[in-house]
Image (cartoon, rainbow, N blue to C red; front, side):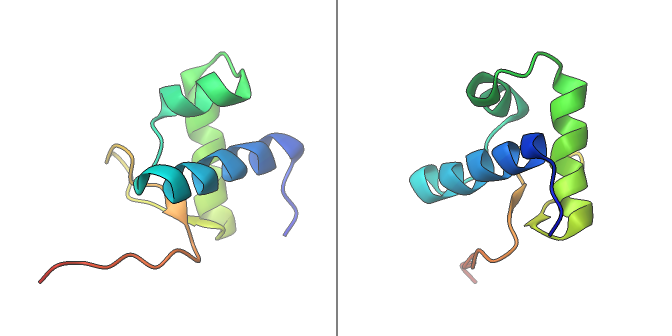
Length: 76
């Protein structure tokens, strides 16, 4: 997978956040850990990860982004 260094850094934040807390990080959380300044730039990079197939997410749904290989159980 050809990710830019910035995309890889964001992916690692998302992956580690899921392992630690069990839900996705907010854009502000990603901004804090990566040092990025613009919310739009971070959001765009997060959704490029979805387009690349390394993450899954639901647009316009907060904290829905997650690594693709993550298994999520639902209560039925």
